[in-house]
Length: 311
Image (cartoon, rainbow, N blue to C red; front, side):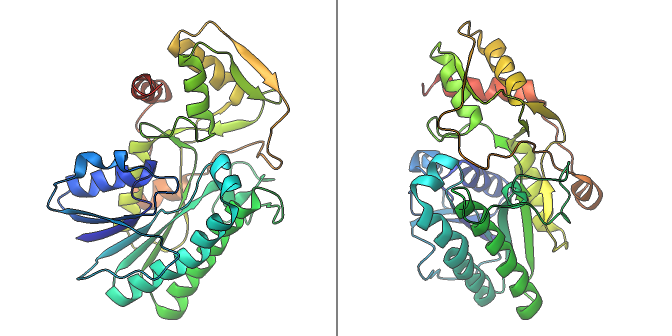
């Protein structure tokens, strides 16, 4: 296939480039580099099946030649980023999704939207199944990301129903691994960075909020299986192994041998921070025959090794 990936210089986008190239496909990579970085794809320079275009997908997209699949992963994805770029976040979820859908229409390509567990907001249902419609504060500071993704899902389904475009929607739960930015504000790089510097880990609140952490290779496998399937409704991809942020902090300190411990803070906590987050992955298991393979300690060891080189 000839595959176009937006957000290709970001954490997940760059790993998708690797996977499709390793599987023998051609990759056209788009990124405006607001939050992505070309060092994530520098190792692909010179590959005859890889082409990088610096481009903002909220503007018209022109690509010469055929395209068999469009994977739309462009968007600020961490709280620090979408609070810094609120308008850009809304535009890439709306205009960017519209433009990439139009490209897929024009090329007769499959289309896969990267959505997020954030469409569920601060959930009142646990675990979160794809039929749950969510509990989102539309005007809160996190709303710029949540609503951008909810709109992106809505217009993707509209293109599927009205234009009969062949679409897929993946709802991504907490994912970690090499190439995350150390300063992106998410809990994994925050904790690992502090631990490797010998600092106490900062836990907001009492640490009782929960998350489910999956290693990036499991997510990439799920995405590839979804793209190859014929299932058009949203699919959660995430591990059902749930733990509190406090327990996660203790685990990071243990794996990094950090003696500095933990500090608790309330200030700078973003309103609307979900208290629970765990997917119901029944749909992924049943339809895609997908389950996560990498255990948390194994994945964290690999991620810590990566961050040792960048701290």
